[in-house]
Length: 332
Image (cartoon, rainbow, N blue to C red; front, side, top):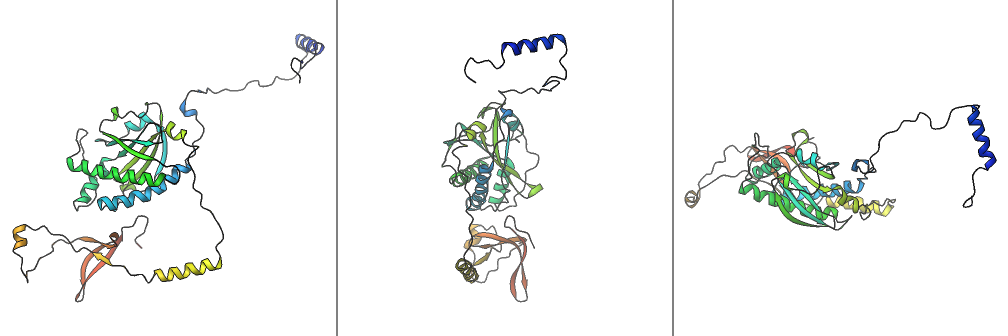
């Protein structure tokens, strides 16, 4: 239709007016009785659905790096659940945090603004227990006014270093990031990475076994910072192709050869406290008793594989495998 051209002629418009005025128009009008819903264009909740596929891939890599890092830095073979992605209001998230709180404000360039590395206090307590040879377990009846001790602060720093190293490795295939520690904030009111009504993206990794989880490590980003780099995130796709006959034969031979590789399995019988005076007094023929040996770990190349009990069979010392310490493995 050309500019200025009428859709209906003057005669057609006049005929329509006469029919309407006479009341001879039959049938119902269009779009009558329609319902309407209010829609706030300024509301953040009216955003399009957020595709978390790339973040889930990053979390999968972070999950592996986190478990390896805790074992390397703190000798803690922790059960780490696969990370989950959740989007919620910043105010609701902060109000759900336990006390005392460890909020590590971090600059993750090129992401906009600051992010938060939240370490659950129960994770800190369990790391301290494990570090001093105890059993990782939650600490009951923790006062909200309780402050972290100097030892717990050292452990939190080690965990933070592990988290940062894992983040660099996890994000590398999708986006090269740098983690810069800003400060540790014990007061949630002062950790203002977003307004209470603004959205944040929470990547949560639970530490512990299922319902007996000790706590979680959260990586929290402002929604806008992730939304701005969504176009730059690279989803790593695994190329699928058919395997040739030579490759299958090579894989079979390699598998048989690997079965012949020998490893040294080590079981620490136990540890006993001893004073310097008693150590200086030891001589050939002295007997040192190990009491309440309990359970130990069978390690291969420094990695705990099984939980074992010490004992004997005939004239030989022996160990009995009780459970697997590898995450995701059954005890069958």
